Length: 68
Image (cartoon, rainbow, N blue to C red; front, side, top):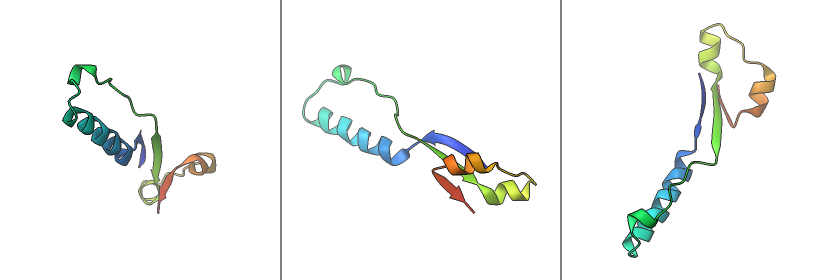
């Protein structure tokens, strides 16, 4: 119903950069570990209504994606 997670397309782009560095000869031990910096808030209104829940408008306004 509510998901707060990292952006998969963003992670795939960063993974491509790592693969490029390895193909160019960088050692895996020299490549720093990165954590996601962008997170997305997704809310499924249809599921909330089916469960009889109401999502406050303040949370809906902050959502990156609202599924109806």
